[in-house]
Length: 508
Image (cartoon, rainbow, N blue to C red; front, side):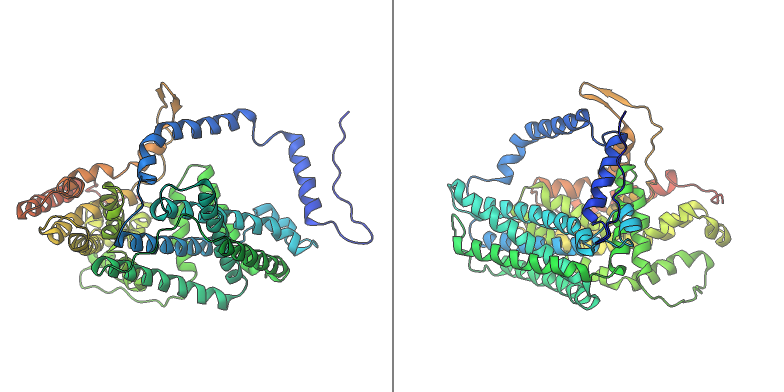
């Protein structure tokens, strides 16, 4: 007869600790069955091994070239690594970084347990994430900047320095979570650092800066000093866990829990709505009446109002226009992919309203709009944003990317409507269709629903063939290329409005 584990009893001297409560919960879960079977672990490890064996020989030489970067490219790589480090801090800040599970948030946080013992596993997770991110950045930096041949001790030194630097960045994000004043300072400082690094990289392209020296390994004294600093700051962070307010834990914990639910259910469409609600919930807005002369232009005025309230995002997009030109030192497909993603991101600033129109079509019926007219009106602002962003990005790419002379800026302007149409298709993707029949392959059976959702909108890129061919083949475009791209963009937009939208009024 098996004995059921009893919950930890409260002693007369002290209440149970968070560690004892977690141990009791784990025992109760183990009695019901294992959460991760050996078969699942085997399939995961085998999938990773097969992916590395298939992709590794092709991607390896591109990730680790035989010779390090030379000349001004070294300064650009160093600046990009700094920008990635600032991006890691920004991502950790958006996620918390200290979060608790929903069960811990509901039962253990109000319980009379040690706050330090409750939050210590969350701090360990954040430090591990920071260390892994720093290790990846250090590996990328060593691949592009370290001397050849690179000994094993030198690589270990770079990886150790990167891991410690990632821990320091994670501790910076943790320190900002405790006090709102620090949070506001860090949220204002990280964008400023990113803009400054982008301007430095752009200056390095225009006027080559002194290249950093080629070294085989970091100085041991530097690594030891970084480790000592990280250890001291970690001790201070552990000590300050007891003073972290509850209000600083609830919102990030619920947000991360919703993200994990979307990942577990393989339903990424939930993330867009969650992100939108979280964005507007943090802002105090004043009502403004929408009074256009033509009632059918109410969606357009709403998009312009949303664009005005998201002014900082426009600043971010403007600062990101030189990014395709800065990435020309990498693989040849990287600038083209950055152009497509950047133009689609610029077009998606106001496309949350298109998702709301599909979910709640009552407003469109009150305005007397059909589905085709609604999409046509909603397409105006995304098309202007995507056209402006792609034109500036292609102009910078033609000046700084080492491409043949030609009207690159005009080609970018002609490419903009196609990028906007791709973003519109992505916004109208909706939920994943899990009713599709599974597909049998020699490697096993998989559900095509997530793949179809992921590739939604990729077919529109066929109308961007002149721009993509010019970038991938490093061809010299002429004005007839611009005319062809413009004609294809207009044809793609008209074809989608005619065949991809509904002429009838939406049903409520």
